[in-house]
Length: 112
Length: 111
Image (cartoon, rainbow over all chains, first blue to last red; front, side, top):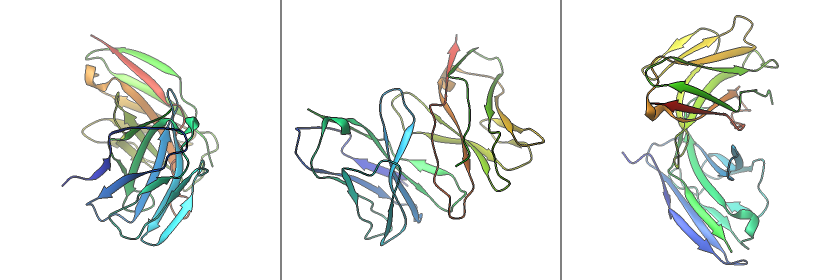
């Protein structure tokens, strides 16, 4: 089983460009999360989902959008990239509300 | 959300035990104590969690104070592969299942 996979691994964007970060899981977990991690800092929650069709904002949602049409996929959309969005993005899933979170390998995004 | 306090960094020698402390003085009765670690250039990975009793698994042990206001992650024999940032996080589940990551403790293991 692949667990939580993320694509791409690396990406460089120009200011104002858009992109979608992909996250897929094969664990059939209901809960999915998107975090960003700036250098030397802990992870900050961007958006999360408790199941297909249900999403909600986390701590730092501005500049991002998500959708959850299936249990497996939870893409993160950046509409107008800004240098402040330069970060490493991690997707995670979780079976139940007090269970372990499993993280993907991350996407390193640079906005120039 | 109840918060945790950890030292910014700690050092250990290889093959020696490591005790990583975490204070959570405002913990509520339903908060689980979770520990994750993040190896360089990787996503966080689960280490251990507990509610009230001490817990052991193949990676580590978790010692929880009787009043639950502090806990200690114990690595019994540190290896170079244990060098990572260790995060202590509270999770009360239910409608408050989101994890809040602080800066964690950077553990350096000396050969």
